[in-house]
Structure formats: structure tokens, C-alpha cells
Length: 245
Image (cartoon, rainbow, N blue to C red; front, side, top):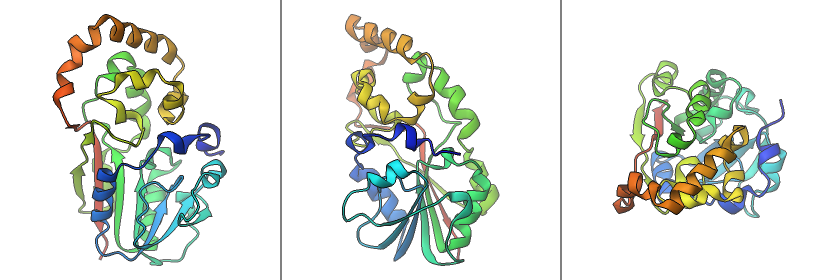
């Protein structure tokens, strides 16, 4: 199967700039691991620079956008990681598990190649959705089949630590929930092009016309303006950490 980001990944790096606060949470969860495999690595977001990192990425488009000086990258899939058992201290995966064709196989492979721990940033499909779902309820329908329930991680890995990752109101990484306090951003086609969910939506233009109209009329502000006082918001992103030894 052709990786989705071979199709939608063009220009990805312009809108998906790693947020330092999210990076701090991920890097802290890696603990003392010196060698790290980044599974579904994309363009290299959130790869720590103070450790020996190897990236695994299926998409040619994303590999070509990795910046100069990024970690060495191997093209391959999470379900069949081309490395030996226990080759790395840790394995990480950032906002990627919902793109895998076989979630359980990918987790087992990460578990096989890492000696100490797994660190996975994901989205909890049981969490309340933020206001965008009021305009685009289809995003819930899209997420539910592909986002692994948080309990599934414990089923596969045993005891796990699950931490909320609140999203800052000025988040620099333009994933779906990043613009919860900047609604005009969703009207920008370049912003939407860097979000995989929008590539799957068929009726987004109509919903976006409604959003634009509500922003102009003040209806959005009346309904959701109370969020403008917040510095961050928990909208369902979770950091799952599993100790393997």
C-alpha cells in the first residue's frame, strides 16, 4: 500500500514545525535512553538531537523533506521493522499509530527492537472532541476506526503510563488540534494540506463555508470565545510510556 504521506505530504514541513513544549514531554519520557528508533518518523519532528537516533519511515515524500543533519533514515514499515532484537534502548512513535495497517504488529515490533522503553504520542478516541467536530462531525467517524483505544496499549504492553499532553494556544505543530484557539487557520488550504484528516474528508468545503460565515458574524465567538482566555487545552492527545525492563 502506498503511504498516505506520499500523496498529502508535499509542503508538510512548512506547517508542521515541532512544538518545543510537546518535544520536552517526549524527550523527558525517553529517560536515559541513548539509542532511539523513531518509528513512522516523517520529516523528523521531535527527534532528540542529544541521542543516537535512527528513523524508520515508509514515505519517500517525507524522507525527501527531512532536513540536512537529521537522523539517519531507513525506509520501512512499523509492521516489519528491519532491525535486530533489542538493538535500541528505546523506540518512539509520534502521531503515527493511526496510519499503521496493523497496530498490534507495529507495537510488537517496537517492543522487539527496544530494550528499555517505548514512548508513543497518540490521540485518545474516547476524549471529548473540540469545537471543530461541531462543524465537521465526520472527523469523529474517521477517527474512531483508526485511533487505537488507550486501553489497547496496556493490553499489548502490560502496565503503561498515560499522560495528557495539553496543546498550547500557539502550538507550532499544525496537526488537527493545533489551531483550537485560531479558527481562521482551518480556512487556509496550506494548513489543511498538512493535516491528514482533511485529505479524507469529502464535504469539508461546505463545513468550512459555515465556519467562515460564523467567524464573520461573530457566532463562533459567541459559542467558543470563552476559550480565548486559555493558554492550553487538553483535547485528547496522550503520551503513552511503557517500561520494557
